Image 1: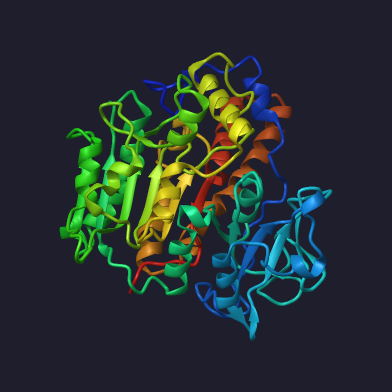
Image 2: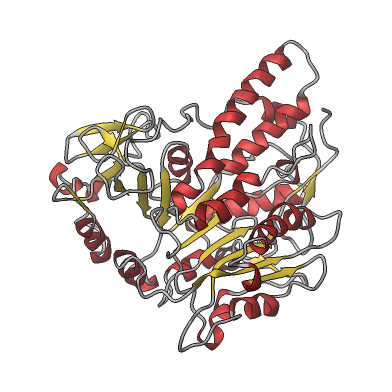
Length: 480
């Protein structure tokens, strides 16, 4: 496979960003993977993997370990007592064998911070992958919730954990609605009114030559077709198809309010959006921070979170999947640094996003923060920390779309009432397959075989898979 003449991404700079590969683009394809610790999950435990309440499956909390003047005693590090009251209530409320849920610490100053987590209750480090599963001493639960900003507990740890566990992140302060989310979680969303059988899919399409057309076809339409073929759901599917109609912000708002009333709720229980995400380098740093990753509609306008809530709409227990650049958040170092020409449109997007994260700190994007902290919060938000490239959505050898595991997660997984973290396990398993393929291709390259484009594909695809993140608790599931 030959190298592409140019790449395009789902960021937004007033148009679709494109770029030719840099002079180091091939060198980027040959570099080692970000982490060499990815493995497939161990065989499932004797209890069903969705039963996270069982001690052999388990749930735990991951926190940053304070250092310097904020350092804590080992006894304090075994608890979440320095965290907001809502987090303390969550740990106390999720008990195993009569004890609060285990707390694990990420040690930024450890020699290998992405290989182990520290459990101060048992005074033992716990290996990520390959060890025991559950809440016993020396074991790592199958479900983990990271609490903190990506500056405190980096995205890279979440990427590594995603290859082994069902992982979510909660990055909310009490002022941003942390208590709303924890209250709903501890109550198992008993009061949530979103209708799980009602769905809204909103796919922007800027035409056949744009990446949004590929995302609409490979993600939005495939999921809409799955839902429409279901006898119970087919009459409650709202597909705002940008290939047929304008997919504007008002259209999305209308889709969210289909079936919804302020008194009874009953809005969509599952929401899917595919679009560019706001990454315009022309915005000042603080403006980009507040708009990062927001959906761009068919008119090129940003969908502001506050407009979604006009009229009293609430997510009220919905699960939202957003396929857009930086819809999940941003980081100080892009996984794609060195891939494209620095002064290209894609290069300017990567530079603007990482510069903003350096200035303000890596953090989750504004839309999921607003949804998860709402008065009646969303259950979970799934999005991307990096751009999606056109090359990663379709297999260059077969022409087959590479999103079946995603559509399976959004239908078979969620609608079998699997916890959201378990529903996406098939998606993250691709990390292992792509790693093996990359190693084989790299050996072939060393023998002078013409596999440059294949190496690039494996690198892009693996990093695309790992940078999709779940925001919210990984144990949440749609109501029965």
